[in-house]
Amino acid sequence: MPVIERTIEINAPIDRVFEFITDISNHPRVSPPETNERIIDAGEVPMRLGTVVKLRARYGGFNWELSSQITAFDQPDPGCPQSAYFRDEQVSGPFKRWQHDHLFESTLPGVTRLTDRFTYSAPLGLLGKVAEWLWLNRRLHRLMEHLQTQQKRLIEGLIGGS
Image (tube, rainbow, N blue to C red; front, side, top):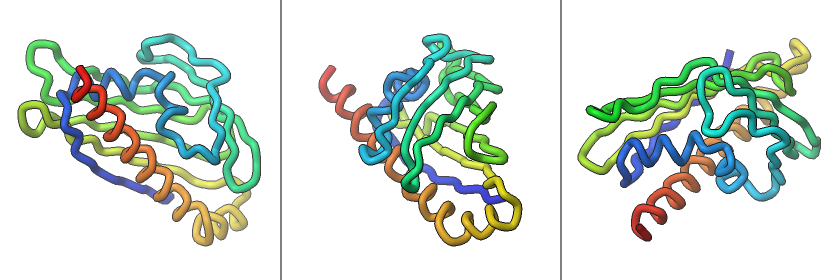
């Protein structure tokens, strides 16, 4: 099963980074514009363990819907915010399996290391494996890079503007 992992440092405190990323209304703001991503059902806001979010987007020339549930949720400790974590997993959607881990670590005062990890498998057996190799792996690498770059830009802009 393919795993894609990428880490970025964001010049903002861990609680602000976690708050921005767990606010599902920000997700379309950081998604690539060509995906035309829309939230169909935001579930509980703010997100918490058990929240289910439903999105609609366009990838690879196809429109699809994905429902994802928060299956782990460990927010920063207000007294000592050194780390945080949450995981969303596909309940229904285009993948045979989809799991997205979000890891947050305070590295220096006011700096957060964000690591995203996609663990996934395409449907359709051997045809899905070929699609992963020919297209999906590269597409998901680009998606993760875009998401993190936009998150960094927007969060640092909010911190600088406050």
